[in-house]
Image (cartoon, rainbow, N blue to C red; front, side, top):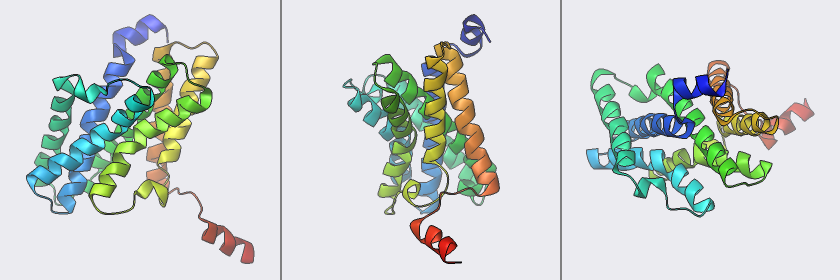
Length: 219
């Protein structure tokens, strides 16, 4: 796929992925707060925290003013995701477990892994920096939302989640290293992240714990 074709289909890769990520993660975070029976204000706070915390951390790492503080459009997109979550809770009994929310989470993870990789590449950090910032951008919001929900961030002890962002960020760096255009690298990063995440959900992938490895060795 040529750079011109990618531009026509997707426009500015960062803007497209950022928009998708904000709406998707605000929806997911709000759904978590709804499950915990937060009030409307609490739902909005958790939703916006999940949407923005990763990106704010990314921007601070590259020493620039967070985008969330630069444009009212950013907040509007987050509030759209909050509104969608509230709407889903009216028509669904368990919106946080519905395929819409699960797929939205995977899409948000992919979108933010991609925006993180784009920003990291633009500021000229190392390969490790690209992957690290992509991962922080992708999972930072979810970790912060879990803290607001008074529980340990699930990315630290269950599920194959942050690893998907690591793979996506690595794919972005690899495509750029071999001379691929930014748009192509963004598409590959997003595709790798979302496919591995949906596969992890479908097949219940998880990383082993030390206790699990110990039990395997003692058999």
